[in-house]
Image (tube, rainbow, N blue to C red):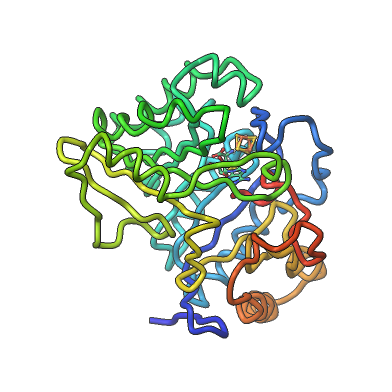
Length: 327
Ligand code: SAM
Ligand code: SF4
């Protein structure tokens, strides 16, 4: 089977695709206010994204995550997911969503054969939800979560805990994995864009909080999912608890991914601003072979590791917001 490795010997088999920079929420650590949206002309059309995906597949990238902004606000997103899922060589298509628009779409997503849905939910308290996201939509997200988990689609909940904002929700969020067959993962906030204004929690701190409550937990050693999360299992829980220790955990040596922004730039690393423009050559009529060459170039330029602890004056640092990258 074809596979593509970067300069550090890491196999790259996973691409995150941001299909829009727009969103129907205003999460305070991501997009707390209206920021100028990328104009429609600059956003890749779905046909263009599929062309890039075909090239990616031919290089050995077979797992795709569709993200945003909020992917479900883009018209035609489900048709795109269907086409992506049907592309020859694609092994896995998953979605990351805030869940607001999810509930009525579950039957169609199930019919498409989506391989998993990550729902971002930072609290189970409607008031805190409004404080974090700016909208009163907790009920809709909950409805989406319930519809998703009863459909049999594999569901994960992703939560970002912010000091002084939703720390108190940690235990309740973990209990979602007790009550439902859902993995709940805690993502350490990264100092990107508005996220720089907040402090979060690393795995060690959260784990000691959990250990006090569930001393019989054990570490899950077998791989679970495509990403950098490490998991624990707690007896009596139907799902696992995961930690994405983005800053303190430094999992760069196993990084398997590249990211496509909605305006057609390929990013080899979340931290660095560096990216390769695929849209211009695509619109200038580049052949699949030329596009493959550019994707390979981006993979070869993938740096050894992020530098999130370096001063925020580092000129190489990403200047896009997380909503423009897709997480
Ligand atoms: N709108 C969709 C959602 O919320 O799932 C997809 C895009 S959103 C940018 C993807 C993920 O990035 C969400 O789980 C969100 O919590 C996370 N995120 C946003 N800003 C972040 C930051 N500074 N550090 C860590 N995670 C962040
Ligand atoms: Fe929107 Fe997702 Fe960012 Fe929240 S985290 S503002 S839902 S893109």
